[in-house]
Amino acid sequence: MKRRNFLSVAGASLALASFEGLALEKSKRPLRLLILGGTRFIGLHMTELALARGHTLTFFNRGRTNTDRFPGVERLRGDRNGDLKSLEGREWDAVIDNSGYVPRQVRDAAALLEPRVARYVFISTISVYESFARANDETSPVGKLADESVETVDGATYGPLKALCETAAYKVFGERRTSIIRPGLIVGPDDNTDRFTYWPARAARGGEMIAPNSPRDPIQLIDARDLAAFTLRIIEDGTGGTFNALSPTGRFTIGDVVTESIAAAKALAKPAIAPKARWIDTKTLDEQKITPWGDMPAWAPSEGDNAGFAATSADRAVKAGLSVRSMRETARDTLVWHLARPEAERAKLKAGLSPEREAEALLAIAKGEAKKG
Image 1 (tube, rainbow, N blue to C red):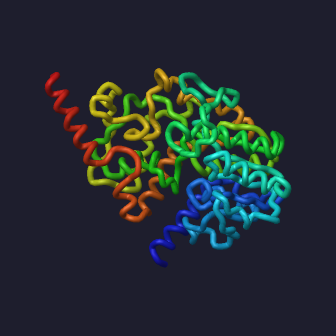
Image 2 (cartoon, helix red, strand yellow):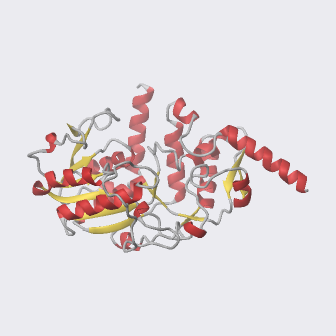
Image 3 (tube, helix red, strand yellow):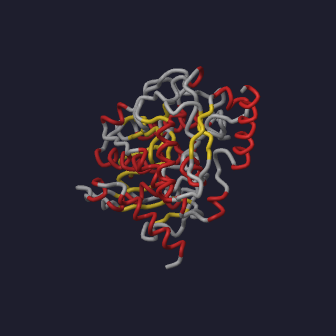
């Protein structure tokens, strides 16, 4: 078997096994599901689980990504920006919208599908909230745009545009037939952003590694497979409403991420020099221009404007069936996937410190400590 095919099969087996009991049982009512997108990250896990539970799937996308995955799934070719023709005249029990970023896209798709689709599930984000200076729940204010016609998606507009997308879905399908899911940081195998992958990948290189501030600092995230399971549960139960889908407050710390990443690296990658975390306080990180979230993925200091960033309520989702797996499982499975990636992807991650920058920072920190000593 060729390496790429072997890795695809291995990855699929890993993902399916990780759903445990939910995937082992067929749904009592097989559904016809449409996924707008479907061939990246969370769509892959949603598809894996939905097929295992006996549902019939259709992808609608441009046909450019992961075209070899799930060859048995029907694919409708089109483009959300003006070419929805292939969706006309078809019926589904639910649509999962993984790829809506501007309200026009959601409004147009929802209006076309509403007469023949029972439920619209929109995957949003906790970035919709107006402020993270305090803890948020689903009733907290969302961000707004001065000009709601803007369609440029960037750091300033991403959250407010997603909030407008939610409104567009509600306006067309109504509250009873709309389900809004707001994930936190989505992590796990197949994450091409590398925002969590950085940690087990960095540990796999071995040696001293920079870790941010304190291992006690809280974080929140959601494994893509847990997000997939929750999304399918919402659809199968016919549950409407808005849900923050992320780990409950206090469940995880950045220390959990680093510790489990190191444990996974020692067990799987077996680097020549064992990985060891060097916890660097925020003042020193600032001096070295090492930024939260970008250079230190998944972490931000819980202070000032970010005081409530790791305190978003997941209570409503937990009551609706959200289950969150252990950090050990997420770190280990992410590293298994990462080690099977092509060399070019493993060598240059999209997030976190580069080896060169980290080495320079560690050297500068050591020199600074020597002067003080």
